[in-house]
Amino acid sequence: NAGVTQTPKFQVLKTGQSMTLQCAQDMNHEYMSWYRQDPGMGLRLIHYSVGAGITDQGEVPNGYNVSRSTTEDFPLRLLSAAPSQTSVYFCASSYGGGVSEQFFGPGTRLTVL
Amino acid sequence: EDQVTQSPEALRLQEGESSSLNCSYTVSGLRGLFWYRQDPGKGPEFLFTLYSAGEEKEKERLKATLTKKESFLHITAPKPEDSATYLCAVQAADFGNEKLTFGTGTRLTIIP
Image 1 (cartoon, each protein chain N blue to C red):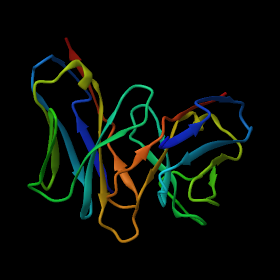
Image 2 (cartoon, chains in turn purple, red; image 1 turned 120 degrees about the vertical axis):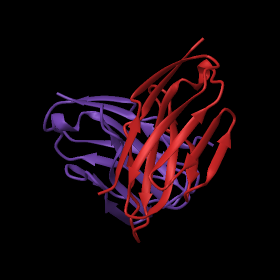
Image 3 (cartoon, each protein chain N blue to C red; image 1 turned 90 degrees about the vertical axis):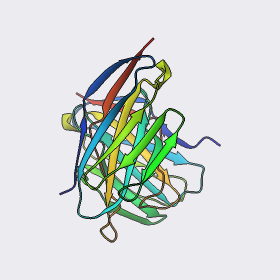
């Protein structure tokens, strides 16, 4: 049982490049979400999904796209990277939304030059 | 707007020296308050969920309490392995609201 896995662990992009951050979970959780963590700020919700085929915006969705074609995978796409997107990105999953315990992945540290 | 403020930002304790971390919150109806532990370079790890004022939960040397305005994470006789950043988060009781609002955390260092 690997839990929540994220790839890559580190990534450097140039402004304007696009990329996909991968997230997978093997716990059959319906709820998955993406957060970013910046120094001096709390974790902020980017996008979330309550099940395959259903996604919704969080607090800071601009510049990011998501899709959920399977229960296991929830990739986050950066369409045209900007320096403001330099951050550590965490994927999380839970059995349900709301007050369910969230399991976080190890994170992806992204630098946009 | 939901807000979470954690204090202090950083805390250094000697091994065995008990203390408390504070989480003050403002939310339009509380569905749940969460405590997570985060080690450097890793994702947050769930510790507790508290639902209503007066509730308490314990796990090893940690005890979380909740009032209508704040939560405390009490650490009793800490050990060096308790060193981590402790995050507090709240979820509002709005229907369909899945957002957790996180504080910026308290970085705890336990000195042997």
